[in-house]
Length: 352
Image (cartoon, rainbow, N blue to C red; front, side, top):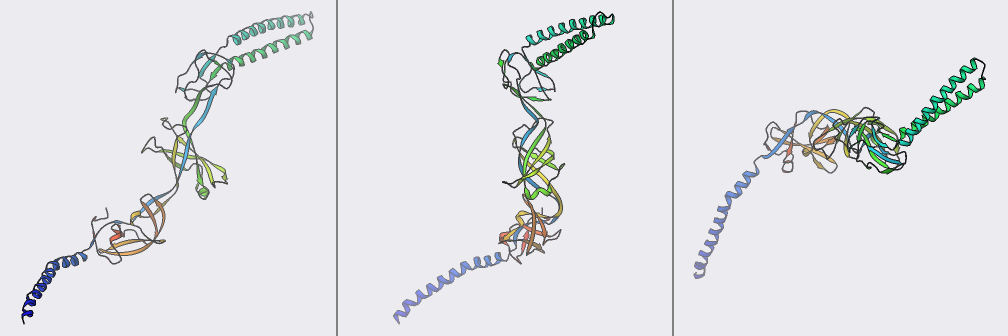
């Protein structure tokens, strides 16, 4: 009887403690159950029909429309340098004058000899008229005049070679010579580039060959000008496929009126393959499961998991070939927290 009296308060205390613990945890359990029944907050967007350009990306190197290294053709001393570094010049503009004193003296001598030979020819022709000279002498004198005139033409050509001229209009590079220096054939004087138009060569995979044609629009970008685009057109597609890379070389022409693009630049080329009118959704709406793609379609705040077939991709968006209709609403944020039949609460009404 004594033992029962000792145990009874202990048992009562344990029971009271257990009841107290159940009591204080009961609201949390109820709250959790209530929270589990709350709709899942998500963000959505509407499936829209949009213009979807299908593009080809490539890297190309900028080249001048015309480009050459200007060199000397004669071994001679420089008497005048008639250009500055980076100067724009016209076709035929004189750039460098070499020492031409000897050639000018030779031309003066030949001109005097020709003048004298013509006088002799005229005198002989008058003698023939009076039968004081034969026709043979006239022929010999005419041959002498022609010979001297041919030598004069050669001397003038040699004189012209001592003037270095720009063969076409363009922009000069850095000057490599100075007045008084002795230059020889092959010595570099400067460079000349026509950069009013830039030629860009780039390679496209063999599988895209059917999509290429002359006149097709391209857009070029350079890291030197962030945010800027330069438009051009395809001027030629190579007639051969590279058997190693299985690609074809393409050349595009890009107008460069402001002279911003320079030869040697690396350009990112975007080629418009074709333009589709198709259904578009954000790429983040896709839920990949193995080799299939799914989206969560929202209707009356209830989620339906639906398989879709996708086509072309661009950064951030994707083409939907089948599985969705225009105007349907899909989940873009919160896809990992929902499943088939889940109740949702849309945070961005209108899908914005």
